[in-house]
Image 1 (cartoon, rainbow, N blue to C red):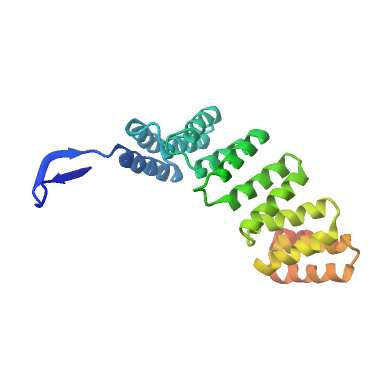
Image 2 (tube, rainbow, N blue to C red; image 1 turned 135 degrees about the vertical axis):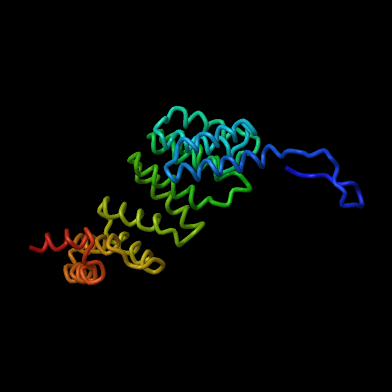
Length: 240
């Protein structure tokens, strides 16, 4: 709601204008807040209000998609995602969200196209996130070569992306390229603190390279730093 005034004065004009788009975005945000709190009824009430105010903007349609995804109505969620990416104010963020959704539904080819479309948008600033999502999706689809390519692209945009670094290491371990895996894990530990997951990878890598002393060192670190972790328990069991 905005109020007009006469030029050169602070005297208000009786006429008021209602900003439908702003109101829709506020209602959509409120709806998502209720959804996060587990109140789906109030979430739907506010989202319906948002849809009434501005049915063709991205924020409203993405919010509706989130709602239907949350309650398990995936076909309806997909319908709203499709409306979002062709809305007049469509952004790369909406496309990235839709790409993740499609990947979760195992629609890998279309997911790839949507992610790449987002990346190509001049104003889109989260290319590293979309490339990482492309890598995750390609790995889920069983295309390890493509997954490696996309993870490397993500790291070109942001060398500190933790998921891309660890995923590349895991792929190298899975394909038996332990020397590359060792190098990749070193890169990971330069930018990210050691974790139970990364130390366990170190054990596997050094075992694959038949460097049992190095593997033992990773094992000692795992037990010392993360004694209560699942990985530490598994390591202890393997040593018995």
